Length: 64
Image (cartoon, rainbow, N blue to C red):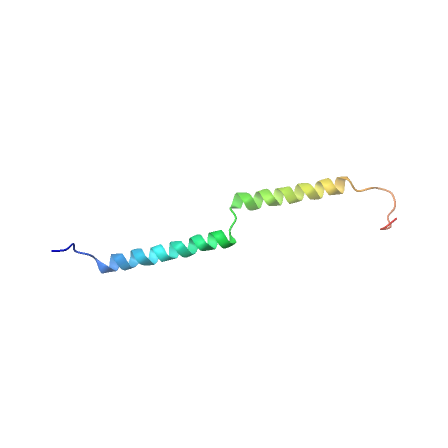
């Protein structure tokens, strides 16, 4: 005779596998790690500070 199989467990495994596959697709499509996001935010803030540091003082009018 064949092996006894619990259909409920097989169904749950299949559902978990489908959810994991969908989650992986979403991570690839939408995701960056928290470290990547924080690194980008730090870099953007640093660039803003550097740009502000190079601002010329003197005339308050734009374009002169």
